[in-house]
Structure formats: C-alpha cells, structure tokens
Length: 363
Image (cartoon, rainbow, N blue to C red):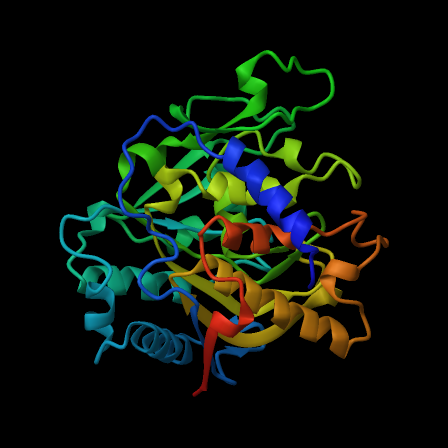
C-alpha cells in the first residue's frame, strides 16, 4: 500500500483541523501505549475445531500473547501492568459480522479473568457496543456473567443516527460532511458524538475487534471498531460507493482525547477472519486464520492485519484490498485503507514497517 506523500500530508492537515471539539481536559494519551509498534501474533492449530472455539487452546494463546506483549513473567503480572483495583474497564466488542464472525465467549471470558486477576471488580467491568439489538443477535449477552454490566448507546441501527440519549453532547468530532438534504449550518449534522459509556462510565477500555475486510474502509480491525463503534452519525462517512470518506473519518474520531486516552489494550480475534465482502460474514470469504493478535498500538495492529488479509487474497488470486475494484460482494470504488496511515500521521501508532515489530508464536 503506497500513498503519495503529498496526499498523506493533505489528509493529516485536514484531520488536525477537524478532529476534536471535546471540552475535557487532556491527559497522557493511551494510544499508542507503552509498546508502540509492537504486535504479538499467537497461533494454535487446535484453537477451533468444526467451527467451535476450543477453550484450553484459546486460554494458552491469550496467556502467551499477554506475557509476550508486556514482557511480564506470568499472566497476572501482564494484566496488572495495565489494570488495577478501582479501574472501571470497558470491553468494546464487535458483533457486526453476526454470530458467524464475531469474537467468542472463550476470548471474552479470558479477558474477564485477566481483569479479575488484576484486581478489577466485576461491577467495574462494562461490556459495550453501540447497538443493543446487534449485540444480542450475535449472542454476546449469553456470555456475560452476572455482575458484569452491559451498556449500549442505541437500541438498533437506523439510517438517521442522530439519537442523543446514549451520547455525550460535550464530546464530539466535527467535520463538514453531511447526508444529502441535511442543513450544514445545524451542528448536529456535522458532528458525531461519543457514547456516554466511554465518556462517563469507564476510565479505560479494551478493544476487541475481529480481523475483517470492509467495503469502504478496506479493513475493519482496531481503528474502525472504535471510530464507528463509539460515536453516532457515522453512516455519513460512507454513504455511497463513491461518496466515501472513511479514510479521514476514522482517524479523526479515534483522535478524540476521550477515546485515545482511554484505549489501553487491543486484542484482535483472528481465529476466524474474512478477506472480502465485509463487514458481514459471507461464508465463501471467511477462513480460519487460527491466530490472535495483541498490541497497545492500533495502527501497527491494523497494518499487520491488512497484510494478513492481503496475503489471503493473493492466495486465492485476488488483488490487494487497496487495489481492488467493485464486484458483487464489495461495491465501493476505492477501499480506503489509507485510514491506517493517516492515523499513524496523527500519532495514534506506528505505520512504518521498519519500526513495527511483529513477533509470532505457534503453540
């Protein structure tokens, strides 16, 4: 993926001018975290059998991933390097792909156990997503034990996306991008407001994306699970196959201080993944990658994930995501993978391959 330098600078300048109108005081950013450029990939050939996640191999993958990422001597030490008693921790799940392509109970339970071992009380853990219905349709509510809370910003997807009950009027990303027929002078149409669970209920969050292709953004991994999963009024970013602004919209949202400063850990579930036709799960494009990725740096993680998806596409004779053209399963003219590079330009993580260290383990 090569983007002309003049375009990167242009996009970065635009993002800097539109990124944040949060009234909150800023603190030390949570992204890219203590391990910029570091990505840990852990594979286990027996982690999924006949389409079913296997708890013990998944547990071992998570233990290796967390200790290798942090350099800690043991599981509990790894979690304590990020979390402690008194923290209120959100877990941002990603159920867009439905039950066939979202993370698994075994992974969520591993995260919950890690937080518990670090001293975080169950009542101080919040599993969240924008849409309640979408989360329940994926079955995630059945995985959450009593005592752990679930929170949602909206009941279900709709084309308007301007409901405010679950969103914070004090935290928003403003951009001169509206849907046809809307009034540009009305700030509601120009803004995407952050959900209250992020702004008011938690002080840290764990991002739990899935490795997937996305028609407009190219891929939907760590960055997009935050940008489109934590604010309202997002469909203005990719209204049509040619009216696509995901390349700048995604890093602009993730750069909001209230998001970037609370993002502590990104765990990408790539046991199952998709290489085309995303973000939904088209069975012919879903494969068992049997790997999980761990990072504090969402840019390095997404760059790594993009390479994995492109490698799979090459294996089946398809062009790289950035060079793909519309077909029956992916309708957008340009898949805007440049959101990853622009996020790197904004300091959200490391994009330069020479500065990214990917350590891979097979158990």
